[in-house]
Structures are given as structure tokens and as C-alpha cells.
Amino acid sequence: MEAFQAEALAKGLVKGVWEKSSEIITEKSKKMIDSLKVDLGTAFSSYLEISYTKYSTIKTLLYRDKLRKLRDFFVIPDLQSWKQEEDTVSAVNSTVVRNFAGENFIIVQGMGGIGKSMLMKHLFLSELEECGEFIPIFFELKDINGKPDDYNLIDVIFEGMHILDESTSKNAIEYALKRGMFMILLDGLDEMESGKAKSFTKKLNDFCDKYPKNNVIISSRPINDFIHFEKFAVLDTMGMDKKQAISLIKKLEYDGEVKGRFIKALDDELFENHEEFASSPLLLTMMFLTYDEFSEIPETPYLFYERAFETLLTKHDSTKSGGYIRIRESKLNSEQFKKVLATFCCITYYNNAFSFSENELTNTLKKVKAEVAGDGIDFDVEKYIPDLTNAVCMLYKEGFTYSFTHRSFQEYFTAVYLKDQTDDIMEKRGLAIIKSNPKRARNDRTFAMLSDMAKNKFEKNILLPLLNEIEKDFKGGDKYDFYFEKTVEGLLITGYDEMLYAWSTEPYGLISFVEKLYLQNWFMLDSDTLKKEYETICKHLKDTDGKCYVFRESNIDIKSTEMFANWNDDFSVFVYNRDAIYCGDDKVLYELMRETQIGQKILAVSTARETLTAKYAVTADADDFFSI
Image (cartoon, rainbow, N blue to C red):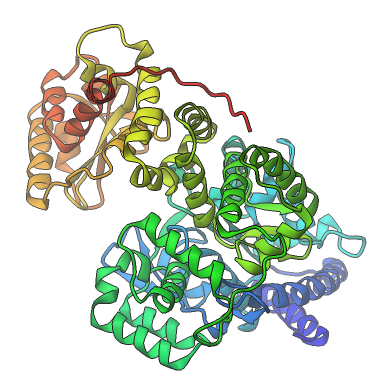
């Protein structure tokens, strides 16, 4: 975009949004407002010119040597509302997304590799190109990690965009915010450090209260903390269907014969057999490269990443089959290179670091060099960096910042690193990673892949020490009661899908991690069984006067009979642990819960320590020391 176009678009957006307002402008205020318009138009023309170039082009695993236009290979995803699970909408622009959500404040969630950041950039570009209702602002939330806790959210966002300068006063920004002139795209909520999340949530909710006319869209991997974002509608980013997957492959610049074979395989049965990979833009691209190299796709996730990395390590020409092996400047052989990369990934994963300045990257690799020296590996840090960016495309450089091409590789190589350690080092460093961020450890692929790679070592060195630590507080009695009290705060009963959900006391604590990883292959009950559980609990509540609370209105006491008299598909009931389940007010409900899928999961976890202790004939204590 040329400068004069950016300036014209910026001034057009400012003028258009202003004219849509119904505010009466007096002669006295006209001069001041005209001055603000000029200030904003000038400031944003510069910002939008730079940002349009930045967000309209991208490097990917396939196009690693030069920037390509995002629109040339981006497939617009469908979004689904938590409130309307049967409906989806194509996210063609922000207006469609807002109308579908029914809110100005929206969270777009999706698994890693689903294309959330590309979607946010697409919404930014669409708002700009179509001269929409708002001036778009793009901000990466990981940039808050380095801010002091007393930061001002508006200052951080606008100063980060280099908008607050001598020509644009804070008064102009404040006035524009009150008028609702901005669409603020906040990318990567899940990349924010857990210690920063609570403060950020409060600041954001305060911002939405003060400036309700603006549009705020947040992207994130799935987390349960969305309940704290009270004003936000939550939309799921849907994986690609077969038609979209084929459309993406057709857009790629690659050998036509290879594309044709892969498209036919996708259409025949490959998509259905590997939908977990094929429905994600990133993983589909890796799948395509791996298919060209090996003519097959592994079923197990960690084997898929292993094959994908081998492909990236040896194949580098993105436009034709065959390729060539690019000389690695570090002169490390493949095994040495992977050892260094795995150590680097483990250190950065522990530190919750996904992007680095050149100095940070160099210093981290120096730590890695000291670590691998014990294995007889020596390398030149300055030569290893271009290998990471060019030879295997694990990192990409944007401006002065290096970032992981995708966090899934960081997770995979962290699992590889832990798998290759002795039992004591796996335990110390694995538990240190989990304790540093239990939420991330539970939701990421790292420990699930580690379990697949080395199940016995994982159970012995990770799960068993965690269970020993958890049960230090156990004073005897029924261990089911111990785990129930620690994990279940209450029971959420929703008439929408006729299901029961346990509301956790510690949704991202150590018990939650153990439950997910120990029961990762838990057999899900069929819908008829789940419906019977729901009906049994509902009948009991109808027949009793147990104290219940309306979901999200915990200060309102109502009788269950009154509650069910007003039942409809959108109505939910939250029964609190302390009043109705555990503390003796309703023993029958407590016993009924034990027979549900929720109760059976708790029962299985409550016996896990004895099971694993007998299996490995060992005991272990947790250690939060991280010795790297």
C-alpha cells in the first residue's frame, strides 16, 4: 500500500466513523473536533501504511525464503457460537463476525495451528480495505509480559502501535475511544504469562465498561477462564472441512503432480483418516510436505511431528518436488542438531518464551551450548541461528524479533528433550515445567506426546511424584472424598444439551493435569447414558428443597422447585459443593454424583497412586528445581 493510499483510507475511516455518530456538534466545539480529526487522520495513516504491509504478507513453513501475500493461500475459517452450536458463519469480515456473535466484545478461540493469528490479520485487512465501521488496531498480548503490573492498557496498546506521539495527544485518542472508533484486535491471550492474566482481565473489563462502543476481538487457545470475560461472546474457530483443505492445497505454489496426488488422496480417504491434522492449516501444510517425502502419514501425533521435522530438515525447495539438502552453517549432523534444538525448546518452553530479541536468543543458545557440551557437542551460536531460521524454519525473523514458526514444534521438542533424560532429570525438569504453568502443561501437547513416546517413564517420573505431592494432605478415610473436595466446587446442569459438568475448584492445578494425562484415553459415555445421568440428577433436585444457585448469580438463593418451574433450553443451574454436594446438606446428591461419569473419573484418579506405586514398586517426591 502506498503512502497516499494509506492516508486516504485512514482519513476516510476517521471521517466515516465520525459522521455515523448522532452527536450534536456545536459551533464552539467544531474547531476542536476538526483539529482532532486531522491529528487522528495523520497519525493513523502512518500506522496503517506500515501495518498493512506487515499483516498482509507472511512467511510460512512452505514459503520460508520470501514473504508471500496472506490472501494468496489463506482459507477463511468458519466460526461457531457457544450459544448456537448448530450454526456457523464464514468469518469474511469483522461485521459478519460481530453480527453473528451479537456482541461488540468477542473471543475467538481455537487449537494451535488452526489459524487464529492469520484470521486476526485477515479481519484487520478487511476492516481497512472495506473502509468498515472502525479503525483497526492489532496488538500481540505477549508484549504485556514484560510490563510492570501498574501499566495502563490504553497506553500499552497505542504506544505499542507508535500512535501516541507529539502530533496526536491522549485527548484525541480518548475522544475517539468514547466515540467508538476502534476495532482492537488482541492476539494470543494464551501467550500471556499466568501471573499477568488476572490484572489484564480486570483492566480489559474496565476498558469495556468505559468505552463500550468500540469493537474488541481476542484470539486464544481454549481456556476455561473465559467466564471472567463477562461481556465477551465466545466463538470457536472451526477446523477446515475437506473442501476447505483441498482449496488450501490448490492455492499452494508447488509441483503440480505432487499436489494432484495429494488432493486425490485427501478426497479419497486421507482427510477422514487424518482429520486431526488435515483440518488445521499449519498441520495440513506439514502433512503435505511429509506426504511428498514419505508417501504416508503417521497416525500418532509425535510420530507425525518427527516425520514433519525430518522433512523440513532435508527438503527446502517450496516450489517443486525433489528439493535439495541445504548446507547447515553450524556443521552439526542431524542428531546433534536435534539435541541442541530440543534443549533450546525445553529452556524456552519452561520460561514461557515464544519470541526473542537477538540478544535474548544468543544468550539462550549460549546456555544450550554449555548444557550439550557434556554430550560432546560443540557449535557456533552465531551460525546456529541462521540454521534455525533458514535450514529448518523453526524460527522466523520479523524486524528485530525472532519467533517460533509455530509453538507445536516447541512442544514436540520439549517432549523429546524430557524423554531422553535420566529418570531423576526427567522428574526434576518435567515437574518444574508443570508447576511453573499447570494450565499450559495441561492444555498443550507436550506431556501427552511425552506419554506416547515413553509411557512408563512418564508415569513413573511425572505422574507418580505429582500424586505423592497431592496426597501429602490426605489424612485418611475415603480417598474419593479427598479428591472430590479438592476438585469439584460445584455441579453445572444445563438444559441446553442435557448434560452435567463439574465446576472445578482448581481447574488448572496439579490434579487437573493428572486427571487429563492419566485418563487421556478415558472412554466417553454415549449420549443416552449421559442423558440418563442428567435426568436422574434433575429429578432429585425437583423432589428436594436443596439450596441451589442460578449460574453466575451466586448471591441469589432460590428453591429448586421454583428453579425448575422456569426451566428452558437457555437456563443453567449451578449447585455449589459447599452447600449442596459435599458438606452434608444433600447426601443423596453426593452419592448420585459418584455414579456419574464425573464421579467415576474422580474415583479413577483417587486410586491412581496405589496403581502406579504397585506397577513401579517405587515412591517419589516432587522437586521444583529446574537445573538448566
